[in-house]
Image (cartoon, rainbow, N blue to C red):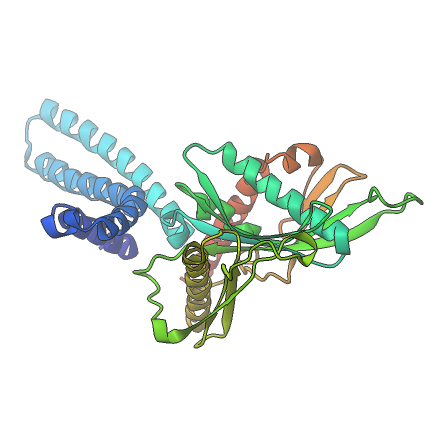
Length: 360
């Protein structure tokens, strides 16, 4: 069987097709939504594999007909049909090779992004806000993509100490997975009287959004603390303890959320982030344990790694992982990330293919 890992996805897709016809599933709204989400995420790969398999069967039939045919004119026609099928099959093979190289990221739709201000005080917080706005503009330009702020800690000057938000849409995680890491800005702050260029930083983390099916967190595995939500400057903004802090005891992961006035809603949002962080840890551990899993340079996901510099005096944005500099900083800050994202995906593809070739 060719492309066995993709065939498994087709098998799962067909299982879900049957489940979506089950009256018990149709009567259970939460279960139905969960299955529909997984089903939709697998559709692109599953349908491509199904088409590939169909063409492979057509080629076998065409070859048998060619071997059995004795009439010269009929043989010529059969050979032409076989050549066309083989050419089409080659295109499908290339498409599936791309899907194999892309891995699970191609079938995963949603993500959770965390942006935190780093070194640089107020200037770093303002830069974190600008990064958030940049990604918001990018999402707005994508058909069918949606965002939801899960947690935000603002500063009095309009910056952000940190912000956590979700992005949902076809191919969202695949396209934005390489944004994880350290982002550095170089510019003259408005408060700088001597005209000196300052350097500030922010970190970005891109987490695959996990479903309750993927990561089952038991009630005994968490500790829930509640507290009063606070606004910029630390003042209390709620009389009730609506803000929540959840600690995942097995891993020590801590998530907090205070954006909603309802404690129940804050807990639900915090659990979404927690599941994604736990899933990321599980995936990282699995990748580290697999000797045949070659981690690419740009796909390390290390938040401490400096990946990109935004130099405002020069109008330049440089991605250090692929040595790419683009002199269109204004457009990029307005969400024009297509050139950066395409270059990163292409570099990752070439590096993975090179790694596969060295292991054969």
